[in-house]
Amino acid sequence: MQIKKTLFLVLMITILSSCAGAEPVVNEGPAVMTNTMPQPEGEEENAAEPTTVAEETDLANGPTGWEVEVVAENLNVPWSVVFPSEDRILVSERVGTIQEVVDGQVTEEPVYEFNDVFVSGEAGLMGMALHPDFEENGFVYVCYTNQTGAGTINRVVRLVDGGETLTFDSVIMDNIPSNAIHAGGRIEFGPDGKLYITTGDTRQADLAQDTESLAGKILRINPDGSIPDDNPFPGSPVYSYGHRNPEGISWDEESGLMLSTEHGPSGFDGPPGGDEINFILAGANYGWPLVSHEETLEGAVTPIITFTPAEAPASALVYNRDELPFFTGDLFFGALVGRGVVRVELEIDLPDVQAKNVEKIVTEVGRVRDVETGPDGYIYFTTSNHDGRGDPREGDDKIYRIVPVFE
Image 1 (cartoon, rainbow, N blue to C red):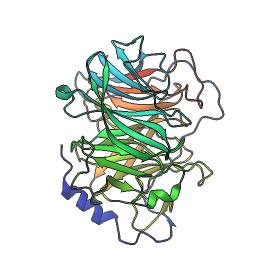
Image 2 (cartoon, one colour; image 1 turned 180 degrees about the horizontal axis):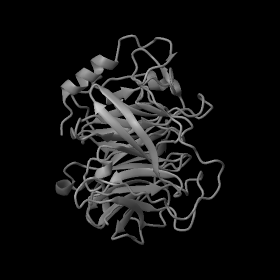
Image 3 (cartoon, rainbow, N blue to C red; image 1 turned 90 degrees about the vertical axis):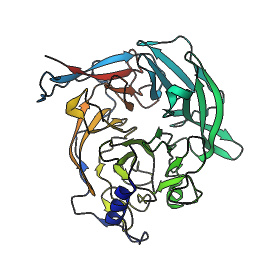
């Protein structure tokens, strides 16, 4: 579904003003809600099995609840999953390999291995996305970190899926600023058929406000790497700016609204916490590093909700299916620091967007990275317990899925 230009116009007029340099002030209105969910203390090992929650639904003969089940095990820091077919999953591992899961089994050898991935801190092999016409062309897009003579960069390349193997096709976009931390790396195709790419501020916060730099941005390009004619900054892939480290993007199908999750400060660059969920508008400023947490800045978009203590949102999924009807229209993200899957019930009455309720629906699995909808309509998510910051347990890392329960 195309994102209507009139929708963006209404949002832009309502929220943005022209004075981007104003001093931050504390927001005392209802636009920002701070999460107060209790956080894990220390690095204690959690229980081996995930939490299962049941919810009632009014749908006749529909599911009465849901539960979590394991899909695949023994992965090495999975970052992104895509679904070429109903029985096949491709998984990018941060170490530089793409694994294939067929009928729940990880194949013995990777279907593709990069020999030029720079793996350090948060950087490595990251986002993947299938071309909107994947069934016709087999194009798989991948984002990874590389080191060149000019420094650390992210690169987006295109592979071709042959059914059992992947082959290299072309470099789609190169020389995106990166770093061992704040590396961005999420890529997704929007309903407009364009490829969106998140970039971190590369630990150089001021670059996020510089529209001439690609750091601290959400980028938008055509599938062949060219710049769309209707981008907000002519000749530039920059779509929005003022981001610290966005790692999740998704779209609400009913309204066409684009949403993003973003990591807040970590102490060295501001008070810890302040993770954000934002609605993304073409050409809009999201304030970093001029404001964070509950501060507001004239001319910058205020987050829908912030999280303190930090959850470290590593993905974003607006669930647009009906197989889990009690979740339809809700936003989900994987929490790294918060350890689990977080559900945010949204109330979208444009131009107003609010978070009605927040809950951690899955715990006791450790750090969670990607959250995606599978071709079966169920919600899949991956753990990231071997990333150097988690507590690996037997079988980690894993792919799980949330499935309906029928009485």
